[in-house]
Length: 66
Image (cartoon, rainbow, N blue to C red; front, side):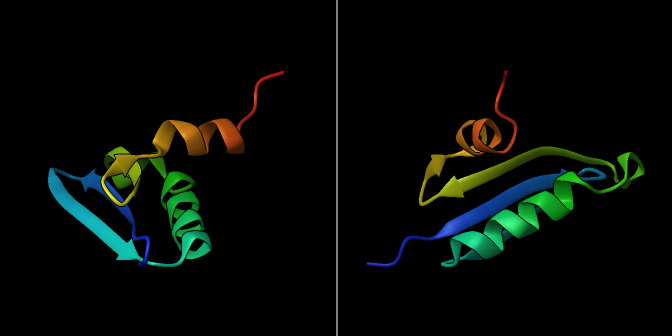
């Protein structure tokens, strides 16, 4: 059974999503979107594993405290 990763976000009021079965590709795409210009109008950026929101888990890994 394949595990699907999906990124969802809103850009200038329009919903966008990307879906893939490759975790690292999805993380790279997430970081590309996250590192974009504030003028890109992106909000509600989330990364999903199947139907579970993994945004907080990924952010804890990418930006550990302390």
